[in-house]
Length: 269
Image (cartoon, rainbow, N blue to C red; front, side, top):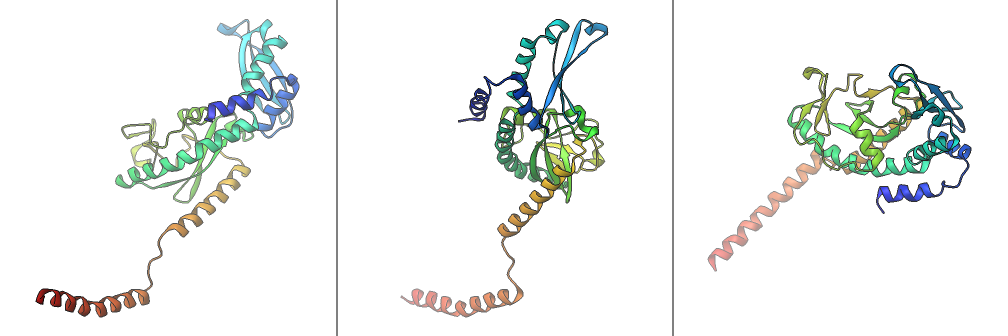
């Protein structure tokens, strides 16, 4: 069963729940327990329409759509929008999306780091796939966006791109870079680029293409970095000690006369 099929099966379980309960499930994705729908009238060229959002119990707002004001206030229309949001933002689907993305992202890591090595840039380590819950004020504009935490030169950062967020949400993350030709991310200076992600040059010292992260996210990233560092150390072949190198050399020298003698005897025959 692929990601889309799995998500469809998950959504079916919530079809007959009351709207209040559906909102409660969405709220769990963002670290809350409840929420309520709010409509806000628009002005200017959008006059006559209203923005629709869910206000969670921590005050964070998640936009869910825009409709003509009478429709925006309709329970039927609100329920339609809640169903659409529930299909994207419920704990089971979010967990499935993160799980589906992590393996291909780690395979892509090796390709990106090989490209970086050719260009004299730094490698990165994929740590976790996260979803922005909007609890950090500076990142609330990207609430509901998926991103990844990376370690570049030991420094942990949240890496965010619209294409990355979409591919994680849709379960379509590729194991290899989707950018055929390397290029530098827009608005970055070449001298600041120090790592490659999806065959694109980025800067670990810039706030662009990044998010401030919460303490919980940072702790998960630090734990993942420690685990990956330990695993890589275990996989890396141990360099023989000087004593072991000398012992191997003596053994090879001891075998050399025997080999030469055998070759000489074969030549005589």
